[in-house]
Image (cartoon, rainbow, N blue to C red; front, side):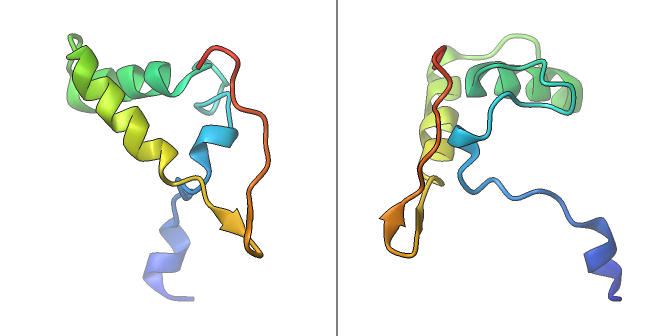
Length: 79
């Protein structure tokens, strides 16, 4: 095994359809997940709502197709 394969991180592909988020399912929406990650990883507690909306919009672009068809899944009702 190569060193980089031992530390793989989950992909963000189709992240819009894989809620709830976090290891303990404590974030129901992408907005919540982004806010929590900013706090825990960067120490930021105040986020600009526009910035969060832009990050969510970007993450939603990662929802794709499989065999030429849109990936199906349930989007969180709170989104």
